[in-house]
Length: 149
Image (cartoon, rainbow, N blue to C red; front, top):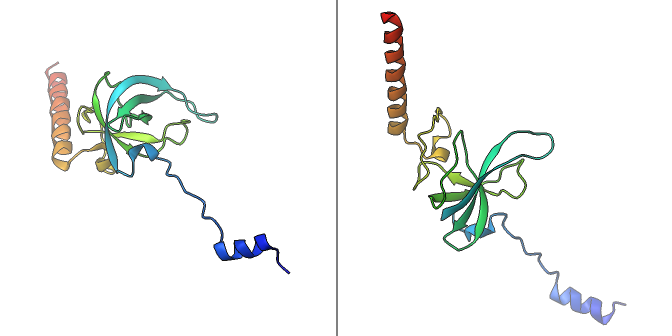
């Protein structure tokens, strides 16, 4: 015969465990605006070795997060406005956010040569073609100078 506690449990049912998002600081928004407070270099976890650029960002929700700077880029200056999205850096502990290039003060014009995944860097097709044409003009000028010699 079941005890009083067992019958009460059967009637009430099991409690559902609460699930928390890994990007809680975004407050269920796809992106948040933030201000860069600190930029630094971080080294990844054990099997990998490199120098990854990360920044401490104060979001518009007044929370501080560490976000990765994607691509080949230098440091962002302090107090620069950036747009942050979710997306963790697999080999950097505690880095769960990524900055979006080409939005606000974060320029994408730092030798981003890519056809695929342009949206992650905020590069429109027209802008991409502009950079390529600029690069081709520069290369043509160098070739002409070599011919003159």
